[in-house]
Length: 377
Image (cartoon, rainbow, N blue to C red; front, side, top):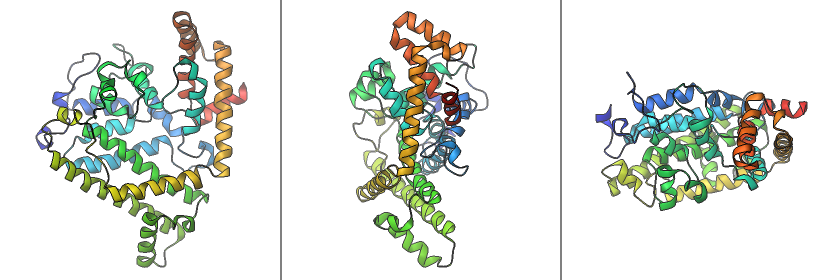
């Protein structure tokens, strides 16, 4: 397989390695091993009960973090294959990029960050890295999943300079303003394609937004007109699906064509040459970027700020804030394992140490478990 990869693709035979040295995998590559470890992790299983926009019990058909991660992986792999990038690596990154997300989506993250402001803050990308490096407790030889540098590099989509300074080689690109591998860049934008288009899908399905509202967006309107002229007698559900399907296809096509032209023009000779660049090579065309921004603005105003979503956001804020306050006041309100870790960390580094364990515990909760725990407290 390595012979089929482009010269600038990440090669599993030339990985920068793992934090703990292991014997080479049998019958699979280093990046396949990463993917498999992510799939078998407890944090990955919990994603099925963590939501994107809607709280988990709102309905069975809305996206969860798990289905979103699978959709990101599908989009990223499609483009990776066409560009001769490493499919296994983009899959490993795509499946692991949301492992650190809190319950209740961005509302939960914002609430936890507010409560952790005096104790180092909370970034879900940093938490995803913490999950795979420390919190997963499956192996006798090391903490975490011991993933390759390349997968961990891709997980860290954003990072503050303060946190980057604590990460050694992994954080240097944020300090030097360099780029990650093309696989990491691709997984990043595949994430954007997935959540933009699927939030439109979930918004239409829920009735919180409608086709008439979306006609003000040229990118959407173009797909709507094509679907209506090509299939005048299909149902509303089929219309919605066809539009979203076409939006995803157009997004992938623009990203693939634009990125390949950019890569061909720069012609990097290796993945390290890609990393040394100041600008990413994977991206949309300029006209398409404007179209995507219009979709984001619409979702922000019409869906994320919809009164029903706002009520869920307020409830999420109340739940996460109350849980944090209760646990930071008395660590023993958490299960024994977490309580002991919090006491030990508090003894070693003071309140910030205990607070980090509290944040770990809450971030690992599913929507349902967070609500149940809140009610019990």
